[in-house]
Length: 174
Image 1 (cartoon, rainbow, N blue to C red):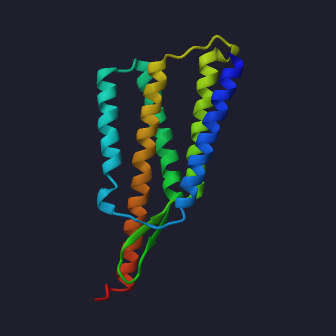
Image 2: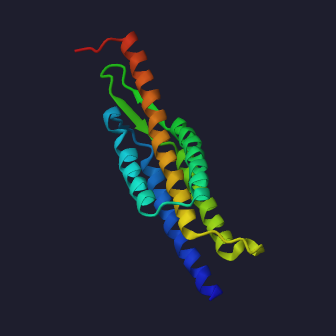
Image 3: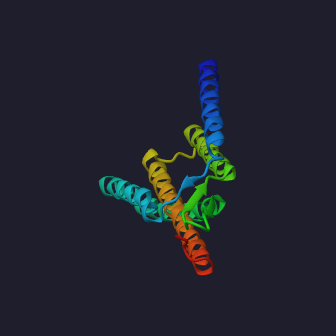
């Protein structure tokens, strides 16, 4: 059984490294940033989180821990948003973004921490400490909601400020 787990981890690692290499290579390209659509992903995820919390409401302690996770996700998301590079074309006033490799590595580290925590919780960490799967799910949903929403909020505020500055100094040329 131990050898099968090691093979599973090895295969997963190879796939993740290959996907990251592909993604990091594409990150060097500028992509159009549309301020008017930054709300879409957080809104979809908010609906998903709302449905999950409605269908499977957490316990009182679960609500408290989920609220703390939402705040932690918001703090992490704000930092991740600050890592995103935003460019304003001074001639066309078009916004572009370039994902930061640091932001990608940041997410990978979060995933690794989550996997380690999952492993510790599954074994009880040798302390007999057991947490319900639903509580872990609730916490992760809240963390992700905070992360997605504030990443895009930080990007929106910064991009709008940058665009306003460029518009104030150089009117759009025809």
